[in-house]
Length: 62
Image 1 (cartoon, rainbow, N blue to C red):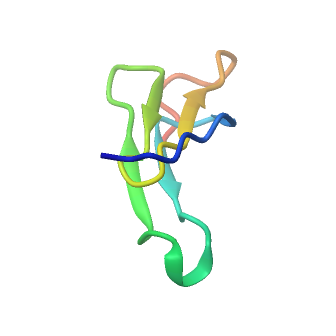
Image 2 (cartoon, helix red, strand yellow):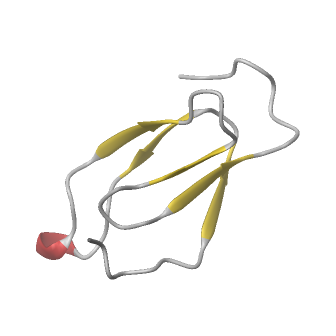
């Protein structure tokens, strides 16, 4: 269970994002997240929330 609650939401322009973690040696591994049909995704390690920009071009993913 994650006890860290990150209150910042990162607005992104693609449905596939990368969370690099933070905190140096105390951080987590680089993780790729896919929103699928949703408009947001939360990192399972640090609870960082990534939300799709409502003005993003549909299907824009890298």
